[in-house]
Length: 501
Image (cartoon, rainbow, N blue to C red; front, top):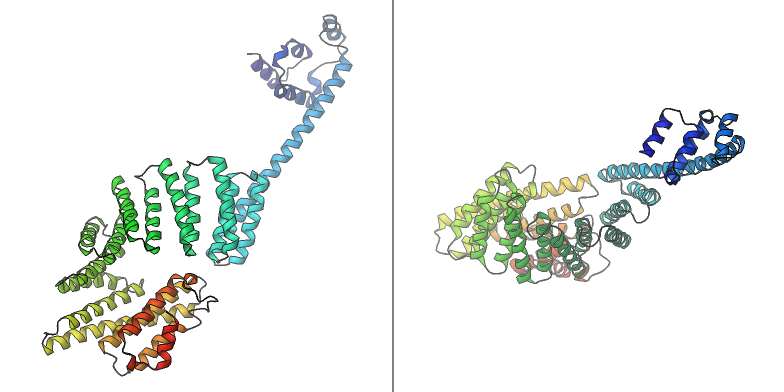
């Protein structure tokens, strides 16, 4: 009640000396005191200190000394309080300036990253970290966010040694601020795990994915999309480490997590398709078939990529089964019809699908020697047509990518080069070279596999230092040496191919 009375008096500008002295001492906390003194300093006329009546009346009761002396005291205290408030306002204004600058620098860096202007983006992100520290404080989550943004840029530009400490700093800040069971901590741990996975540092990736998984299980439980995501990535890590059983175990858990909540069916179908590939490659085609048929049922119609991928995987499953060649052909035809509708948008996927059609026909020719001459020639013509179309599409795509020379397409260019080499290999196996001899096609394969514009020189020859596409190149060279008779290849080409293995 008394506080409300004081506020009312201040608002009505009717504060008098008698109003002040009549308020109880307990009401004069520092905040109220400063507010009263500030109002007095701004409006000294509100209190009439020159009134002899007022002085005589309250002086007699010991409430105050002379009016002039009280005015000096109040004026001095009001000035001090006002100065302190101005300093605080100045500090607040400075913090607001730094936080606003942090946001501006972050937005500018984001736009520059989209334009692939990484050097300029780095300068802005470094400023964003500095402004976040000044505006929010060194231990604030905004600082963690700023450091993660800078770390992501260093990851994109492969400056891994600069990115790692920033990721660690961000995680420490988030753990101190939110604790170990907060989902934001789990996100940060998941991101740094992906950072190590990109470098093929599988042990570190496993460690951080496991830490992220434990936090997510505590924060959101097993039946959540985020939990499924980390389980799925752990499955891939174990697969790359060669632990197939553990990879399938975690892949199954990732699929079950999404199945439990009954949402995000696109992610569910894709992860189930990947699990089927693992089952097939680990020697369980019957289990893989069951998984893929279930995926086909639940995949949304608009997710054409997954539908095509499932038909391709089913074709691969049936090729691995005895007497299921016709089923494999039927599945691949369905996949090809889907890919053909989107061949301009996804030319490499279309090329790869054409090559698989040729590979199925090649396997049929090799496994069924009892085929009549007419039937065998028709099958070979069908296979050669598919292989030649695949080669043409992949060469066209590779040329287009190399002409564009975008900073972010090296991996895609390398995939296109591998696609060209694999398509040429199938053409050689089918002996459908046309006017070009096998030696010319082999040289064409070697040209795309050792082109320095596609494959920059690696300072280290160890397999651990290879990127994923470089390992795929190694596998492609093995396939060439395995399937092309050495008498068809000059010795120097054999030596070069062996050098990439």
